[in-house]
Structures are given as structure tokens and as C-alpha cells.
Image (cartoon, rainbow, N blue to C red):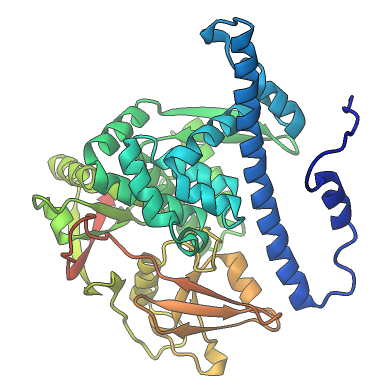
Length: 446
């Protein structure tokens, strides 16, 4: 690889900074190491933003030079992404996508770009924001950008899935027609794909409508629950993979469990009934938000097909979106209370984790006097639940507008997680529904 000779460059020399980083870290305490890791992450984010700015400057320079040489407009900018790809040691396709993001972000996502440049968020967060607002007008995109990123602490505190869900809710509230049209176009692109995986494995993927995707996953999950209860030694993931294979490859001999499949949906009664002027989103357990129009379409289709649909009321605190707690003095979380926690905490409550919630956990440990209650309960993924049991970790509920847990790590750093707000009112209104409904859809057995 050839490298241009170094000339005297103004300002900081990035190569010197890179070499200096190798000397850092000696003699630090654990708390200082955590602080340095955070500062290094901010440096990485700021460096990504610098790469984006330099890529746009390169594109402008190359196009200006080509225009001066009389190159036709259709050929301007050719090869720029390939130069960036070589410099970043990545594919031209990925570099082209990065370049397009770098071009639109400053003008259409200025607040997120400012947070990115300051090292508060990384390139992927800006990409998610751009991707989920692509169906909106520039004006609406600027609105969401300002609401989520004008104060960097808001977007910085979100996990990736939480950010996507919140942007989708707001995008649907601002322009339901554009959001629904985008969904319909996306459903037309459903397909499966197969890619090689390490160790002679294969990655089979399926892009499905949310209705079918959630139903398939619920069927596989129900079969895993049934098999584990019967003493199957395989892991849940192994059972679900084997069940998928057997039902597709050998459906005539595959063992099919009987009984209904249930998918929980949290939705306000205004959205459920389609009240004019109050349309919003619903929350599908295991997936995230979906438009109210799509939810009502599912209900109508199921009723016409004779599929059972029933409603169970769950009350919320007005103006906060917090689901009401249910208390119990039992050591283990009762089935209904555990279900309530899963509905309240659809994703792991560890900040930034975003993994599907699996375990109902006592925030303050039971052996330390922690109550078996919704107030002291939280849902974690299996890995975070195990990590929380390590020496020096602690957690406890904290006051907040919605359920809040503060976790303290062995180095003394604290991290706060807040339960997500369900089905917020449409933007521009002040009315907040006082009741949330859990609509449980019973899917036919496979």
C-alpha cells in the first residue's frame, strides 16, 4: 500500500494522537479505567463525525475539479466513495452509504449531527434516525431531530431499539399516510435469504410482515416452552431452530403442539377504537410499536376468520404513561405479575442493552429484603441478570415519572433506566388516555 509522504499539516496530527493512545492506561484505578473507556468512546464518535465531514469535503472538491474539466453532470462524484472505502478499509457499498448519510445529516438532522460531532452519539445512532425518518418530509424530519437530539442527553440515554421505536411513533404521529405507505411497500419486499456462517453453519433469514413474523416467533417460542417443561435437555434456541427445520422440511412427520398461541399488544382504547384525531401506535410484545391502522386491520381480519380476540384492562398513571404496579409477597413472581413486568419492560432494562427481556428480576435482591412487586421488579436478559449477581453490583428502584431503577457497578458508577412509555398521545395534543388495554390475539396453532 502506498502512502503519501507526510507534509507539514496545520493543527493536530492525527497519527500522533493515535500513537499517543498506546501509552495511556498505565497505573489507572478501575474507576479511572471506566471513565477513560467512556472518554475513548466519545473520541471514537467524534472521529467518525470527522470522517463524515472530510468525506463530504472530498466529494465537493472532486466534483468541483471535475466540473472545471468539463465532466458531464451525470459523471460527477464517480470514484469518491471508492476512495473513502480504501481509506476506511471497507467495501465501496458501505462507504457509499456512509457518504450519503454524511451529506444529508448536517442539513436534515442538524441536532443529531451536533451531538455526533461532540461525541455524544455514534454514527449508527445517526443512521437509525435517518433511516426511520426517510419517509417523512424534510420539515417533519427536522421536527423529530429537534425533539430527540436538541438535548443530547435524551438521545444519548436511549438504546438502539428504544430509539427506533420512539422515532417510529413520532413519524407515524406526524404523517400517518406516509408511514402506512412505507409499510405497504416494505411488505411487498418480503423474502428469505441464506448466508454462510462460521463453523460450517448457515444463517437463514426471513423478512416478513410484522404480523406473520411475530406469529412465527410465538409458535417457535411456545414449542420451546412446552419442550423445556417436558424436560428437553436442549436450549431454547436449539429447540426453536430444530422446530423450524422440522416443520418446514418434514411437515408431515413434525410434532405440532396443540393449543392457541397468544401475542400481547398494549394499546390505548382511543387507538383501539379508532377515535377520530387520536390515532397513534400500539406496542406488540416481542416486536415494538405498530400503527393503530395496522392493529385494527389485524383485529378485523381475525374476527372475520373466527380467531378469538379478547381484551384485558391494564390501568396507567395519567400524564406519565406508567403502567400501574401489582404487588405480591411471594418469593417468585406470580405468573400474572411476571406477565405484567414483561409487558411493561419489553426489552432488557439494562441501559443500552436492547436484548429481549427474559427474566423477571428483583431490583433489590430478595435476600436483602427486596419485595416481590412490580415496584421492585424489572425484566432483564439472561446475561444481564447473571452479571447483576456478580460481586459489587447493586440496584434499587428510584422515584420517577415511570418505573425507574438505578444500578451501581463495582467501580461506583451509576446508571439509570426508565420503563418505556406506552402509546404516547399524538404530537400537538395534551390529552392523555387514562386507561391502557392489553389486547391478546389468539393465533391458530401451526
